[in-house]
Length: 68
Image 1 (cartoon, rainbow, N blue to C red):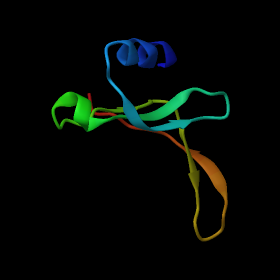
Image 2: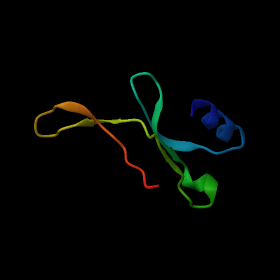
Image 3: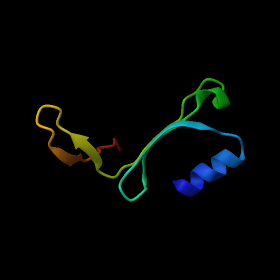
Image 4: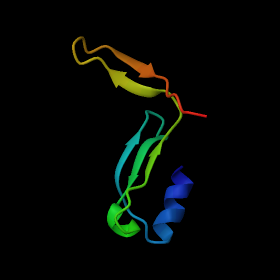
């Protein structure tokens, strides 16, 4: 995804949100809608996402499930 972000930046697409894991891999990425005529493009990685239980503070990983 890092290479793809560079390609998009080269053609003028900016982003305004990103979340990386401990290894620097992209978990979430949000394009700036002003560069896409009001459309917000979002990338959500299929890898397990970090989660924190607000009540206990316990940390874990949530598996993503995609239709198809």
